[in-house]
Length: 415
View 1 (tube, helix red, strand yellow):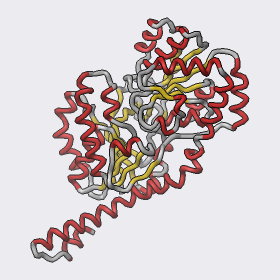
View 2 (cartoon, rainbow, N blue to C red; view 1 turned 90 degrees about the horizontal axis):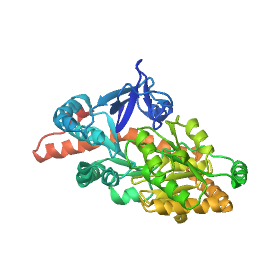
View 3 (cartoon, rainbow, N blue to C red; view 1 turned 180 degrees about the horizontal axis):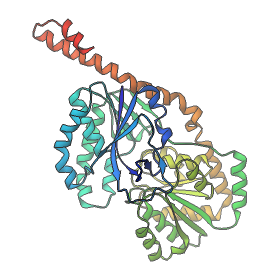
View 4 (cartoon, helix red, strand yellow; view 1 turned 135 degrees about the horizontal axis):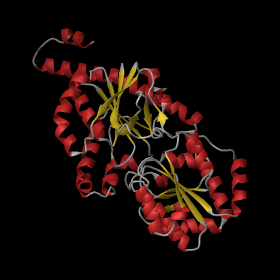
């Protein structure tokens, strides 16, 4: 039995054929799935091969193969959709289980084909497409936002099993009548309380070291807000610095920092290796800035909290579910973020208390606590194949009975 995983994620392929990801996926990502499925086929996009693989995480392995898709949001991709749909209908099998990580144009197209061939369909709902497109910056993206919202909402309503990463936010935006589970895929490795206490005892002098981790291709994670907040906090007298990490072009954000007069306070660290690389980066800082315009339940926020870092976040998505009100600001409000940065710089006792509070909030996300739900999740996905087969049998039986036909032969054909 195959698992078809589909997402708009851009994987990078090296000259020798190895497949890498800028932190989101790794070899271990597929461990649980391969306990329940014979093979995984990943439908996703391929990034240009001339990129450096330094700092990237390898994610190809036996029994996992990739099927590259074009950029379906481009004019060429729009023209290719009808022919691609026909190809997908030929490629997919009725005994496949299709898992679409949404929002995703690839996911929407593959699930459309899956419904046509009678394959089981599940959805991982990780963010709100409306928030993402409305904050993207391009006029066409903003115009497409309501259409994309409707398409993703409909796909989630049609799914047979839905996983949400938030407790309430995404459930309200994208409701379903199907069975659901709440489960984060954050890689949480906690610090010891004494380590956190010792770290912030030593942070009483020197600048407040702020970190930002996120893609730099667009504004959805708010790199511009983080830089503007640092500039405004600096103008208020805060002793502060900012380290920016993540895939994407650095020059536009570096230019912004220099225009605001804080180029000397902002440094860029490139792509961080998944797991240990992210943890080492976080451990060298005091606060994580998460001024997102679009968010589900941020993995990097949970990873930072597990390392004892307070998270100063926007109210986007599920951020209010894990961040205290005192550390929240409206999306785009760099002044409010800057004022909170200045407060923590001036009150290092409050900074240490916020760090310990953050550490205490991640217990539910620790691997030993999340493991039972993770196993249930993958088992439920594997069981979808059987439930789809029974549903198809019932539908066929009902149709035959309407025409006064026997069902025994048709049922045998479906086994």
